[in-house]
Length: 184
Image (cartoon, rainbow, N blue to C red; front, side, top):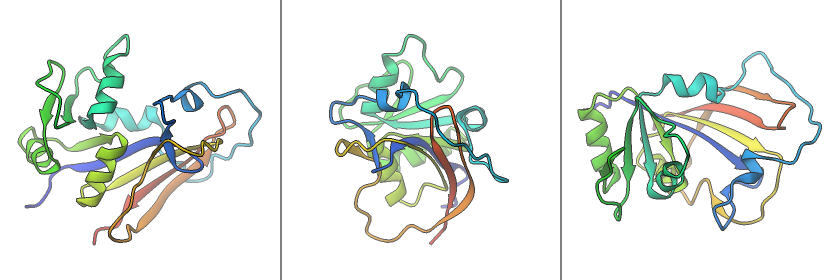
């Protein structure tokens, strides 16, 4: 089946590849200790949230990510289709629940998704393994966590990436890179 939608990852990670501390804490990314950083915008900057998120029509996330965003004061995905990949979550008023990557892929086709934001460590790993990720933007924070939830797990084959853009920002020290995932 030819896929009509594009799977896109946009995520922050520590320099050593963690997306959350063991207890789920994200303050190292969302409220970092202020420091002076060098910056470089470059000729081809990576995507930033303000340019990425408006291009997305659908989101697929795992249960842990869904539970986190459900606790926000305001629902951040108003006007977008949200799909939660979970074997334990029952129906939700804000999202459609699927039990597998195949079920998610079928639902994405049925709802007419075009640009899909794939979020959550295990969900990203599952979609990547299934060949359903086309673009990855990673914002690397200037911190080493040493342990926690890893962004990428073991892969059964190399995943080749083509750099599309990169830059660093002085305010937070994030080094951002956007890649296209090569088709096998």
